[in-house]
Length: 111
Image (cartoon, rainbow, N blue to C red; front, side, top):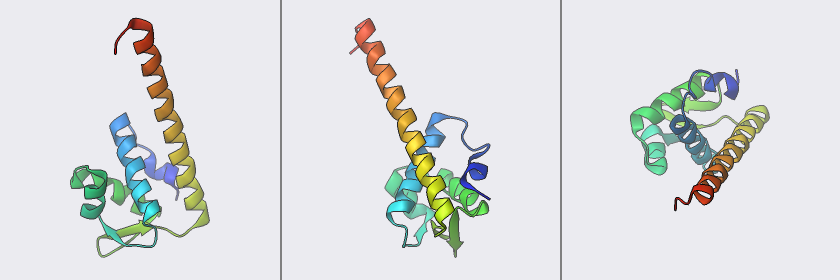
């Protein structure tokens, strides 16, 4: 299994992608710690129900390890590379969207 498989069907909108990115970011920062869905939801400031669904999908694809309703990044180099690629791709997409919005505002005088 892989991150791509976990993301299939989950990334339908920008808000979900941002939440996945934030969840993975928190898990990467705290990679040696076991965190609950509520701890992660509090850190990313998203509803726990949404974070729990994302974590469940990630655990089902073996991207994160789970133990007694706690989660952490699976210490697999391939998974680590997949996560870093996803985070980079998501950051680039976000920056492009911000740049396009700035150009639109400059062109049409919306500030």
